[in-house]
Image 1 (tube, helix red, strand yellow):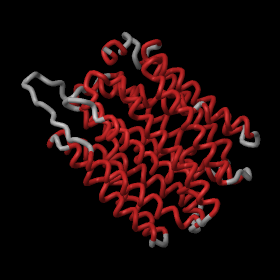
Image 2: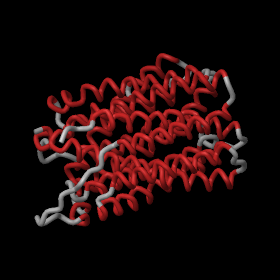
Image 3: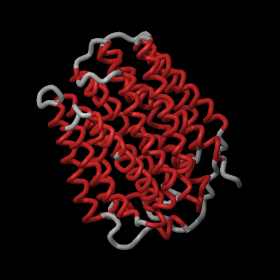
Length: 387
């Protein structure tokens, strides 16, 4: 069966276009609605907290039923419907309630779609980056277009825009062909057996720390730039620049995997994450420093994520793929994102942005040590994945 390249790519395009409309500008929208830095951190942490539970719940259902795509379609529909509530919502309680309800469905879609994509690719898992790069293109299109739009108009348009993009994700999911997992009688390794492996535990710890470190960037980077008198358009441009670098690496990822081991790519990517957060912390007054730091997003996100997706594919196999991708999302983007959002929100004004980003660099330093000691030391996994 041919790989449905454009339908898979279309889902990533609109999913990350939604992220591009939501992540860079949501903190500005919340600030405009009168929320304090601590409240913004708490509301962002609620999204992360839900992301701990929701993907694992949906992943278990998907692996039990084999209906990953049906779950994705239901999740996308209700995510769009619930987010529309922000158009009329007022007050912390309603924003918190909608954040939790939206996140339960929003966080169901991507881990399961990663499993769907890898199923369609089968032995061509190295082509994942060529499909995923369309998500980066969608992010750039949204972050630049919406940044320009919000400069010319009011921030109150943001919930309308994001709701429209969420609706597009649902429509694309309806066009994506379903998958059928063939069950065999071969003895399978149980989830507990997989999770007991020291390398797997180290893998989750590393990705949790890396996403904890990314949280001050995702939640407060736009506010940080505004404090340094950068315009909304320039802010959008810096976000987009990071994703341009990400796209370049995604395009060339198959060649990078053939030349370097996943272990080497991961270690260098984490080291560059340490450098990136220190540059943002102490060089925000200099545009050229911020530009250089954004180029490093190619390593700190694209490099790490491409390796992570393939490692999950290797660790969990076909029979536990839904749960494996969900667990990766839950513990890294969920738990790591929640802890990072909460503490960065709490300490943003107490310690200051420079120390918050410096602590993020320290978390990446710890992740580097763990990865060096435990991940991929036995042999190069690339032969298994790129054959």
